[in-house]
Image (cartoon, rainbow, N blue to C red; front, side):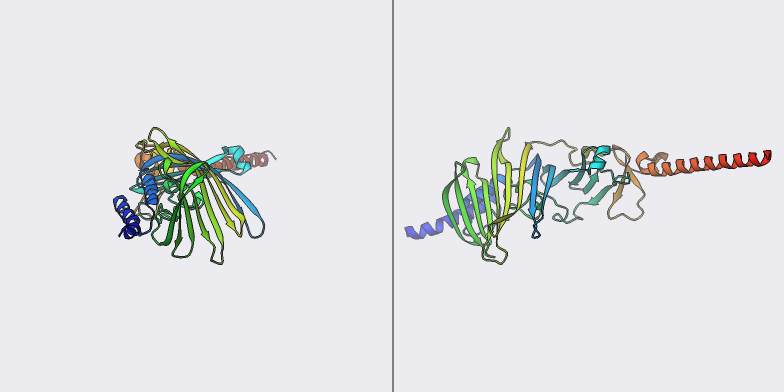
Length: 356
């Protein structure tokens, strides 16, 4: 009877814990995984800044390195991602080192904005799409709570959820053992996915069950690899939330590194109220005069622009934004100058003929 209880009790505890947390449950999911998920799901809103370096090696032997800087605002289902990208050296001398591209998803619409100045001197129009009209994975809606919970690059986190590895139900042969990692007492959870991949998760109970390391290994397939993410976590005050401060992702193929990302995470706020206008055009800081396009364009839609406070028709009250018509004005000025020059030339020739 005692032996029977020993076998049944862990599965029962995992099931009950999962029911309380509302997540997917399999009979052999470790209760510590559920606690790790609970801790990360408790993060509901915040602002974080990421800076990182991504390195990749190609089969040809070539290597390439990317630098990135990103600010993420989130509040429930609302999300805003500001990417700061570098101009080429020539344009950097004219416009500064960085330009900002924004993707904002609120309950009403998806906002796309960039202050990049193109090589021809033009700017990119503000684009609005109805909420739900875009594929979240295609539009790269990165849930920042997934950072450190999946062994992948931060750019690819849009294709994952909190349960991609931790608490994943399609598994077998789950084992748990106590280990020490970087001086911390941790629990190593290991299981085999139904597709044959092996998952290993290091959880630190003393740091509110933070995931401090994770691996997914494909050892029995033709494409053998090991993906690893290792994080240092810190306790953010005043909310008392544990969150990654640094993450390092690596991929080994045949024992050789082919990819690596080193990310530094700065927590600005977690579980604290964000400014009310964070996910609006005004909060994004779009300058007045920006041309607006709606996708798909509703039938009969007139041209619109952002006046700094609201979206208005181009012909509203006879006003025309300077940015929208700057090119037209230049053309008109050029035509006027050419016409004046032609008039002067014709006048001079006419006078010469009269005097000859």
